[in-house]
Length: 115
Image 1 (spheres, rainbow, N blue to C red):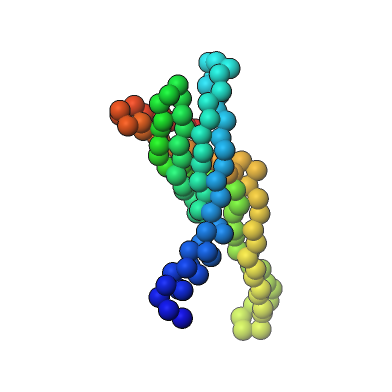
Image 2 (cartoon, one colour):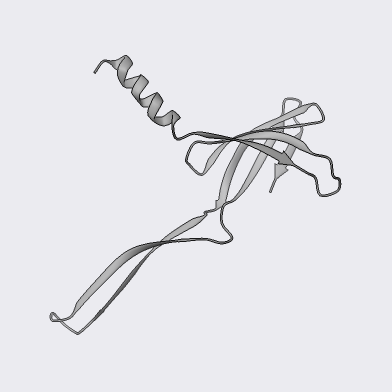
């Protein structure tokens, strides 16, 4: 496999993992709608851009509470060398999960915090 083929294969593989989302935002003190985009590359952070009254804010969103959690449980009986134990990993949904925050900045230095 040539270097170009390897780079192309990696780009196609990683490109399949990325998603783009259209955002609609509304401030708490008015009913006006603003729009933006968020990129998800499969990790716990990504790029984000929002336009508010002609000013574009750009930055990074970061997941602060995961949507799933994983744990390990073990149990057994008996004592000494004759006892036995078993364990297993488990995964469960976090009902208060999938929370993200973003700190954005416009070209003129204005800031925007999204919770």
